Image (tube, rainbow, N blue to C red; front, side, top):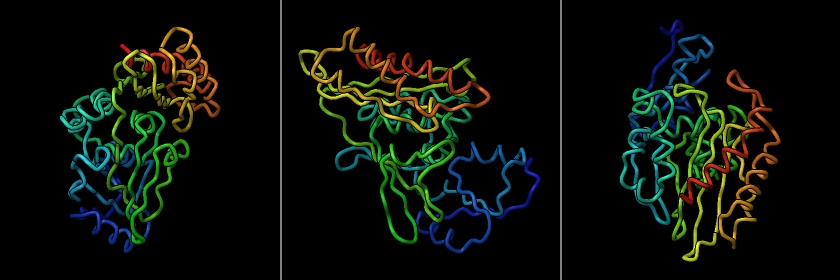
Length: 284
């Protein structure tokens, strides 16, 4: 039960939401599915004066876009996981969404945009978006701007979302020909939030050599980070190259994240293993 009073707003469009944010005074929270904010309000750790609920704002569509895929900010995990377009064009995103912690209730209510804006390291979304080289579109009274996912996440629970802005959609670029995807996350138990995640996109030539590689690690540091995969490009994925990638992933964890689930030193130690398994998953 939420013990404090607040005004509840359900704007019918992104434009209405932006205009509303410009008019509201006091502490305002924007929610998609509310799976992060509402529990905090119930526990009394967050007490906004206004809630702006985007669930009626028409931002849940998933569509083919020029050069890729457009995912609305309020698309739920279950919709993403079952979307034929996502399965065809960005299977890594589908794999991430289908394995979200929290069961059917969270998958049916939680949204990709809400998780991105909350920016907790203990979430699958930030690392997956960085692995997919996604761009986030933000609307405000000053117009639209787009931010690369790797730049959007700035720290634990910190992002580049500015006051008065609304995340409207996420653009996933078209993958290279022959792309393969791998996704792996480490959890202590089925109901645990992730300790570390890794997503990998490999483009393989007909002879098995790697034409391009993008590998991201989430949960380990306060923000998701990319791993240097230059040692993979132009060669096959063999034991030596995978071990080199594993070492690079661990070395890149320069700002390890500590919470009640695990301390930063442990996360740093497992970063290489998680990255290695994502690469192997992509080539399996």
